[in-house]
Image 1 (cartoon, rainbow, N blue to C red):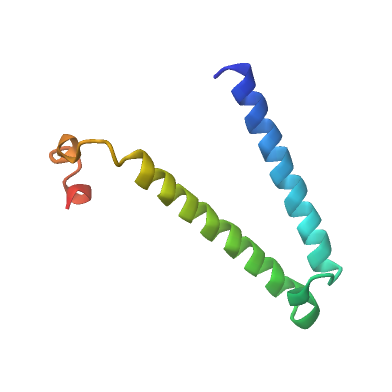
Image 2: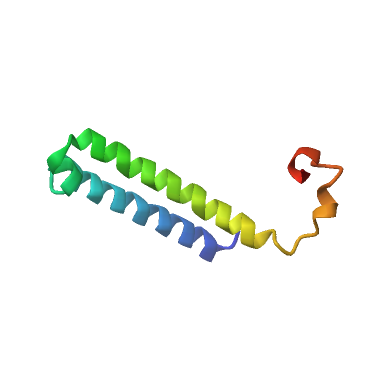
Length: 84
């Protein structure tokens, strides 16, 4: 990997961690609508469930777009279950 890619990956990870810490601070001081009306623990679980769901949707979209031009016949014998 080139240094620019490594920098971008580290910078993105730092921003993600910073954002999660800020959101958790708001949740546990009950400054969000869900944590005010429900338990902050429930709000935290909903937050992480939404992040995980979004990551899966983004990954699926990237696979769908990225694999569209690939010929399916290339994987017929090597990945028979996936080919169905």
